[in-house]
Image 1 (cartoon, helix red, strand yellow):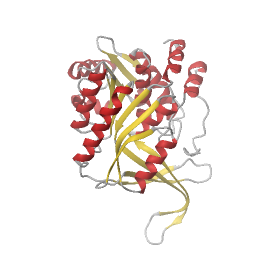
Image 2 (tube, rainbow, N blue to C red; image 1 turned 120 degrees about the vertical axis):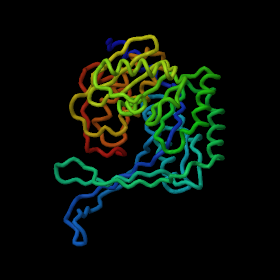
Image 3 (cartoon, rainbow, N blue to C red; image 1 turned 45 degrees about the vertical axis):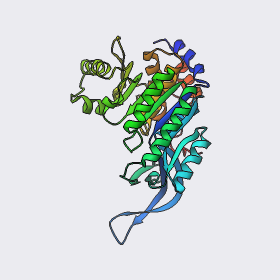
Image 4 (cartoon, one colour; image 1 turned 180 degrees about the vertical axis):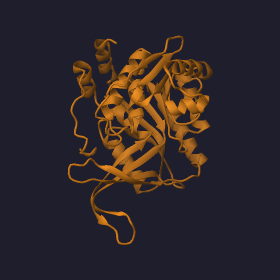
Amino acid sequence: MSRSRLLQILPRFQGKRILVVGDLFLDEYLVGRPTRISREAPVLILEFEKRFALPGGGTNPARNVASLGGVALMAGIVGQDEAGEELRSLLEGAGVRTEGVMVDPARPTITKTRILAHGNHIVRQQVVRVDRFSKQPPDPRTIAQLVNYLEDAAPAVDAILVSDYKSGVVVPEVIDACRRLASKHRKLLTVDSQGDLHRFTGFGMVKANQSEVEATLGEPLDCDDAFAKACRRLLEELGAGMVLITRGADGMSVMEAGGRHTHLPVANKSEVFDVTGAGDTAVAVATLALAAGARPVNAAQLANYAAGLVVRKIGNATTTIDEMREVLISSQFPRVDPEQDPLQ
């Protein structure tokens, strides 16, 4: 790997326009200090200290695009409620454009409430999570509005990134529209999916984690040869230009059409505080790099370093060009305070 080559790619992120299409969540955090055991039941009583919220789900790639100097356009669906208004406000505060965020009055904004407990000199720990969502699909009229927005936005972007959290937005109509528009306007098309990868034929880059690939192909991935075989099979079956498989503590596997399998060991081997959103950061960085003209293996290398940065932070975190430049120059991950609230 040439670090100088990777450093040359970073400035080219600036101004790249990425249309992110996906499921929108509001991640709510309630933080308290344990004080005693309840008399009513054998449970901890937490003394409330603070509340904060972050955009979650498919919003996280968009936030990373914005924090890295790109122009992020978010397309998805929220409910007609306070959570939806807060989520839109948080996105705008992070520099993400929200004209493509549609409102479906029949469905609530998906909200994930995490209750965190902490004590003196103890890192916050999640005690329980409460999810608020609807199992009903979005109104077909709302999906049609979303597709209309994609029609208008696609000609002026550099790439379309689909973030599929299996929560109702990435339906066949939306996938077909993204594929058609990317082909029509000659745009890069990438996806990070938690579902059946065979829905995403014809995409320029398909990113998934190890368990998702195993589920799609019905085969265990237990060695480099198995990952290489899986990459080749996905490239052939999906007609993809590039496959990126995240392997947790074992790093990443990457292969482009007609190329060789490359295993990238994990960039950050210590100080892993929270892996939430690391895959979102990886797909955002890889998409930006490809849109900036990087080779697939270099895009994966940058994604690997970026993931190593965000796992050192709490919650759905983002990284910056300065942080990435620092780690590439010094080979040392910059110091962060894992206890620092994401909103401060």
